[in-house]
Length: 403
Picture 1 (cartoon, one colour):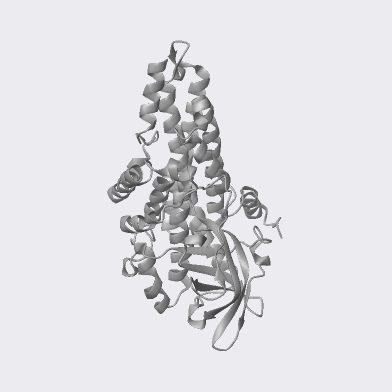
Picture 2 (cartoon, rainbow, N blue to C red):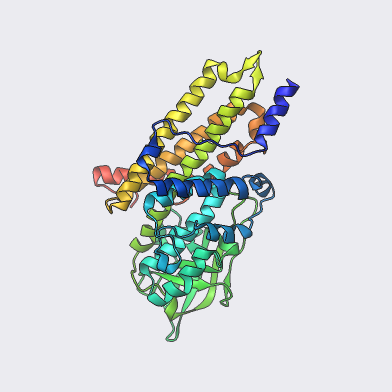
């Protein structure tokens, strides 16, 4: 038994991840897709996996990873190359999110916020000057951004926001607060959504250092511990008029950004699920009980079979969603379905994997408990699990249940 235990400990110290592909989904991918995925997978194995357990235990966000992400092309993969992005398709972006979240959901949060919630709105709704000023620096990781929509009293109902700004002639005066903001304590800029005097929602770019702008950190998290989370507080912040996003106003603008982020989460959750499954499969083959590997028992095989089935279904869901996005046919409801299904799937797999690992599953020797805790946040942010259910209900019946 001691020999078996030491073997397990040794294998757990290395990133030996092997991706499941039961339905040969690789045959649906282009060579460039596989090359991009392989590069990010190697990066995660070298730059995240060896350190992530310590970062999570210490509740530490490694700021240096921002520059590394920039060098790897993780930020703004779908943004045109003219602005420092990758000019890639949606499936490439999804595969990048899958691999980064396989390493850690908090790491993926950092990347998807920068790409989908900061770079995307600046590119989609910003002026040429704003694009040239911010996008290349965001893409390279020179600066980090965050997205301010959720408020202390308005989460699932962003239209109720109270953060507001007034036209003071030479500038806008911004007041209010945002909460549960990924990257906030470390961010150099924030894309903030606020109402003008008429109650119309607009996006503004707020820069660190503007007087009255602070970013208190959120402490005592049990989830996303390697990610930086905080608040955005605006106390008479003077925002230059050239910092308003001119391309679009109204609540539909930030919701369009959330669609991009939710798409990435749908892929990312598959990565977390695959990591839990792969760890459970290897552990079950190595762990000896009653003189044979626990993989020989029917209940363990049932768990592994169900994990692989659900991962395969989610992989196909992501691939089809990516094709729809690349063809310009995707709908918000389709993205909601994938986000909701895949995160729930990943959380269920994390819990089953924890059972297979037994007591070892709660330790930092294996990624299971960290993924499980992280996914408890992922199932809530970018639209809660129940809100996505109601979005689908609205699509099915034509009746909005949450208004």
